[in-house]
Image (cartoon, rainbow, N blue to C red):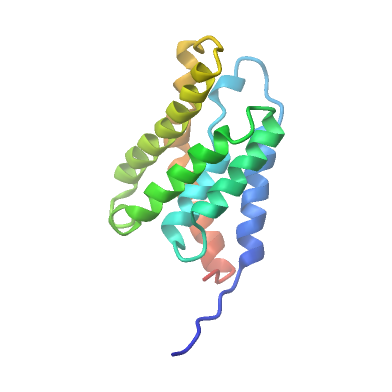
Length: 162
């Protein structure tokens, strides 16, 4: 049995770091609620593109980092991103065959699930329900998916990440 040699771990790490930076970057008050879930989008892409390298444990670690950076309850995003990663891995062979608009709808479902799990934790801790625009990041994430997909695919091919 020949062992496959993986390349580009640094590229994957840098894309996650960029996602974390975009998550905490200050935005004007009116645009703050439109910020997509950058870490979730990057996680979904890598789970679809390289399911043998990026998985549930990476989702958990990235979720913990999001929790630490945003000051949310420790484990809230970790649990949600781990579940999103699991579902992306489970259906990666199907989703990769979808045209980009259907992939965007699948990403919307995964991002809504992430927010739904986070909302469950928020309500469980006794905090009030957020306003209706709480769901806007999922929609903007869906709209940004083609840009994320084509950018990260070009990066993956350019650096021969395998």
